[in-house]
Image 1 (spheres, rainbow, N blue to C red):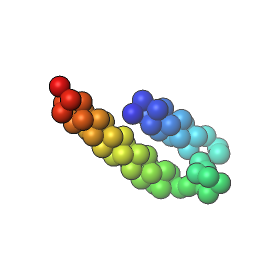
Image 2: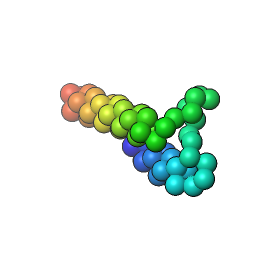
Image 3: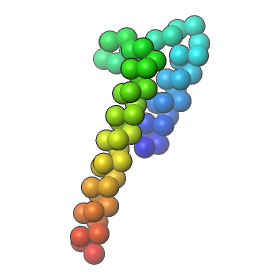
Image 4: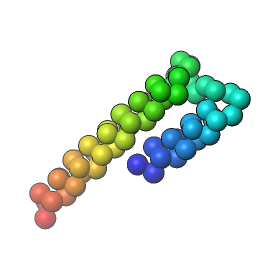
Length: 60
């Protein structure tokens, strides 16, 4: 999640400058699409952490 937070901060700083674009595999993203993508990554990160925690609790 720390990496995703870092990407969020970096992306928002890019949008606050004159560049106004972040690309995802060469596809320019609007700020709204960038935030939607970051939200999806946060959801995926949370799901992976939950899954790992569940497996860890089963092995105890």
